Amino acid sequence: MKKVCIVGCGDGGIMLANRLIKNKEFEITLIDSQTMHYFQPWQLHMAFEGKKEKSIEKRKLLPSKAKLIIKKAKEVDLDNRHIKLEDDTKLQYDFVVIDTGSRGDYDKIPGHKALHDRFGDFHSGSEEASKLWNNVKAFKGGNVIIGPTYPIYKCPPSPVEAVLMFEEYANNKRIREKTNITFITPFPRPYPAEPMNEIVEPIMKSRKIEIATFYDVEEIDIKNQTIKSIEGDALKYDLAALVPPHAGSNIVKDYCDDDGFVKTNKETLLIGDYDDAYCIGDATNIQTSKSGVTVHLESKVVAQRLNGEDAKFNGRTHCPLEVGYSKATFVIGSYTEPVVKLKPSRFNYFMKMNMKYFAWQTLKGKMDWFIDSYFDTTNPHKLNSKINNPKAQN
Ligand SMILES: Cc1cc2nc3c(=O)[nH]c(=O)nc-3n(C[C@H](O)[C@H](O)[C@H](O)COP(=O)(O)OP(=O)(O)OC[C@H]3O[C@@H](n4cnc5c(N)ncnc54)[C@H](O)[C@@H]3O)c2cc1C
Image 1 (tube, rainbow, N blue to C red):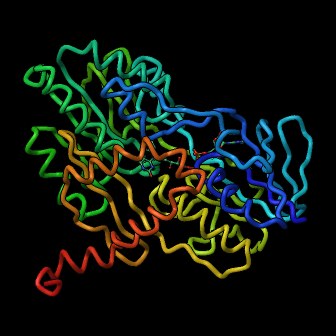
Image 2 (image 1 turned 135 degrees about the vertical axis):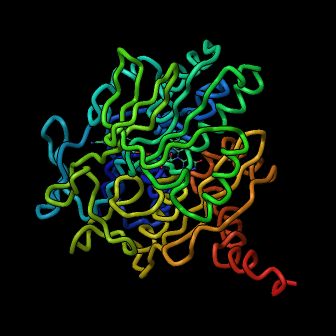
């Protein structure tokens, strides 16, 4: 038997365990500091629509033969093939896969922790999302600021979704005319990928959302309710929900970057020159979208590789982007294909919202038959050719 240890039992670890269990040669152990699993996309709906949390025990999503250890991992030593846990016990492995995700670092920007404590947010957990909803409900008008504070964060569409969902809320509650909404971003445009920005920016402008680009937050002045930028600008807020800079778990000895993300090969998903150590999902330093879809596809690649195939990840993304008023688009691209300029539609919104019902089945690998054919139909090369040469398709 070969010992496969998966550090982090998140979306990626769960999907990988369910894929690997079919191989009788593997003994699978997962390590996570938490017992519960949360459907993170739902935090947006909790924060701006008052929806209830969606969560489940991790154990219920795993095959019965996989072992789950509830402990924090302190260090992964790739040379000596062991994982050190919080109580200093060591686990030896034949193969290790890191899936420790990413987390908001509220200490990077002075004042951010206090802002987060005051308002909650839509990015760090259910409690915080419910807190933000209570603040949203109590809000009667004034200045609202929403946006990312740093270029690295999970779910790239989420801040844009948040500002558009809040605008819809304010409009429905008839407080829109008394509310100034500003979207701040460190990027040169509201959505970093240009083709998607050509969809998003006109929508924001048509809904009279102010846009502050190149806004690098230096400090949040809680006393004066002001968000200050490095460039010397200052924006007043009455309500603010900022996406924090994200960091990795920093547990892989000698193989983490300055933000704690694991240095990972973008195609093979191997760490450094090791042939027995992989990293997937938000935990990698790969410059692609940190999303559930990415880790879904990466878990598939790692399962194939552990089963002896020469599989490679092609950088495929497929992130839902809700624009409010029951419409959504998807950010679809890959390492070689630019993001598709896909118009928002009710059908895409329907697809996005239905993920809630299939989330646990997807993690168990039971929806692969549908997802594989859906991803094939929405292949970015096919979609880009159709959009750029509409006549060629007729
Ligand atoms: C508001 C919001 C909306 C989103 N919307 C979408 C969407 O619509 N579509 C989409 O595809 N993605 C979306 N995402 C992103 C998606 O949820 C994440 O990218 C995905 O969950 C990443 O999976 P993962 O396996 O890499 O990490 P996670 O699922 O976060 O799992 C990491 C696990 O590692 C554990 N861990 C961390 N450190 C340690 C340690 N030292 N020891 C032991 N265990 C540890 C954690 O407890 C956790 O269980 C959204 C995210 C947010 C916040």
